[in-house]
Image (tube, rainbow, N blue to C red):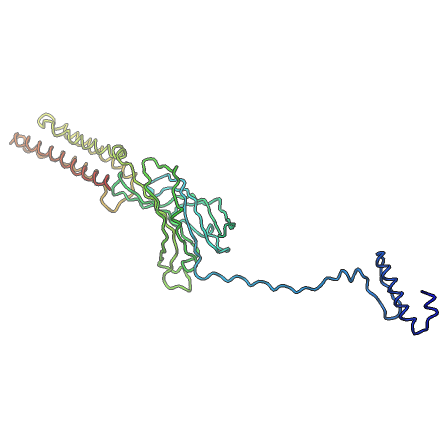
Length: 365
């Protein structure tokens, strides 16, 4: 090759020299050596490794548009599974419940375990809050334990039927943002739940909207605001016969003491009759304190009120008979005995008749 370059004409030397240089560079690239050389001024060649490493420019994909927010309020399917009912306290107007609550929705930013509250609870705690989005929907749940405030209906106590309510409501968002929908099909009471002295008759779950007479300061509202609720109502019937006998036994004793005054002879036992009436008064007053501590004040006339009233009325009639016979037994002993018998039979019929009717009506409720 060198001999050829020397013998060739000057016009061919430059192309031949470049060809030789290209062959040398190819050989050095195959051996892994640097291929940077400068032959003549202004003539350079880039390394083959750098040329191979240069990445190809690809078009950048445009970012996908953000999903549009859902139109209208978030629909949240809500249900309950009640696992415990206990601590029924009528005097304090409360009971305690333990239950699971779940919420199904399609909004990734909404967290009902943080915003839904039990509106009629005195105290409440939540634990085991969780989220499962693997089933095509946001499924959130939590376990609640709450002391619920309840307005007990004592009209027919102790044969009363109660409807106990658990109310769930979103405390942050009104109906324009969140709508709770009752999951009535899956809401149940655990079959192992038992409340001594009661029969659990059923559970009803429904969704309602409640309107408050305030806007809570919302500048977009005028005067009122509405929020969505899910209300679970537990219907229970009390076993009342044993409780009737144990709770009102004092009034029964007071009535019997007052009835014992009528067979006694006034001439020989006038003082004893007054003594029995006084004992009956103390028995009735003592039992009244027991009942009053068990039951909250009521605005209507109840079975308990009827038993108390008839018991005090029987005592009064027995004492009244003693007073009347005081003026009759000297002037007309026969009339006084007839009056005593009539008052005794009348008091018995009055007490048994009125209380029997009240008890039968309450038991049938």
